[in-house]
Image (tube, rainbow, N blue to C red; front, top):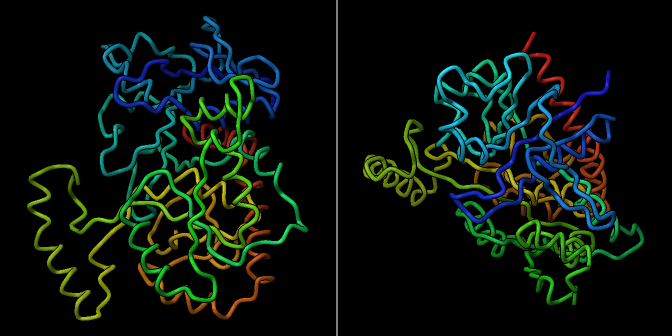
Length: 378
């Protein structure tokens, strides 16, 4: 393939939140570079302290081959990008949107988003029909994450035979399943292993770990990466569950009222010992943690991704790359774990690591995006 120039568009000031870590952009830019392509941006972004340079250097050049937009840039400047005739889009170059939202409150339902030749979006479903220009995406791995995990990856280091747990924020799927795991998983109990952040590893302002900690809005933590490797299992559970019907915006007051009968029905089913999962659905399952755990020595504990109909670029398999909880059946997982040896669990962790490297490394993601682009522009 000839060498391409990919121009990335990110916003240095995001008015709708404090998160200015553009993970998918970093991963994709690293992947393009690994594949031998040139990377530039509308601003300098992602400092690499080890070499005192930026991954994406600012360049006003308009002669690029591919334009890649972070969804926060697009939402911030939609009033300029989507003016009549789309004057800010070069008509002879493909434009790609990387979106981390979900189909509950998507930005890409609006007509102007048809202008993108490709929309790569996370948190999609196999049983939902999408626009022709849409393809499934995932957070995946960055080189920083892979290096940080490799740094503590030691095959001969003993692993604690527990399910490690470490999370920055709460969500109702994780809370519900962790509470059940605490009660029901006796052979491999759930064990919180929170870290103290940069204060614990005494980093200074010039330490690359500290710089990455700041750039990732405090997500980078060597203690956490070490913990992933020294635990036999680690929870990667993420997402939110809500009550059917499906056709609603969950943040609407009116729809919350409309959903009341379904909530009552679910509680009645639960009280009678019936399967209440059929009255619920999950969304926003994708997370940094899943790929971090998948790439580490630990065997990931996750919701059963196939069972909930999630559409991913490459689908990991329950029992081969991770151990999944079907619907809300934590007892089923606890019984499986009780019959598994540490060696069997460790083997799943090893296969999961290879799967993550093969399908969700920066180079794998970049190659996938180029294939997607061929499909949507042919």
